[in-house]
Image (tube, rainbow, N blue to C red; front, side):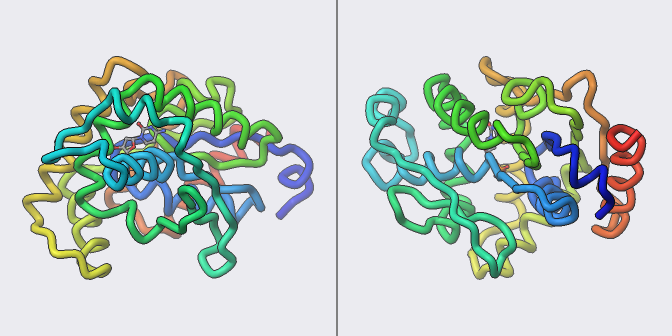
Length: 235
Ligand code: DC
């Protein structure tokens, strides 16, 4: 790592569509720069899990009022896990990494993340976590709402088929019984809901640089990042 990287800590916002590999990319970038990686999708998933486990979902329908009335009771925190080289998310002191990426949570998370009160609370937490800079934060609204002045904004995208296949393989590897069609449908739905929700919809910030990683290896993504970092930040 060179000296300019060490001295000038910045905020790097990584936004984009579901299952683009944002977290993998953001985590690698953070490790490369010695920055903190924050997965904001995990926070929306954690609130969704809490809603499911605490009677705010009945027959697959979210009771928004009940969730909002209980928001003060939801305690979310991140704790660094050296094995993963990233922070794990906890809800009410319970480790929930293993529970937040199931298809049940994925099917409800867009509804939860469309609620203004939920967003206000999580955005405030995210802003606090990035206050001292030196963070790579991935999500949907990081470059537009959470850190509109982020020094470097990256917008990730890839063909929906490629994204669905990745998510499918990921869930299979975890032993979850799920069909490819279900994943394609979930991604299609979430793309639609993320882009059309009234509050902080997913959109590319004007000053974001697009990374379409459809046909790229992780090594190629990092080489791309190095170029961008040199051009935009080190100069
Ligand atoms: O990144 P992910 O797929 O784990 O995110 C889960 C959901 O959370 C996603 O469908 C939209 C929502 N989300 C959001 O609205 N804003 C963010 N900053 C991050 C995620």
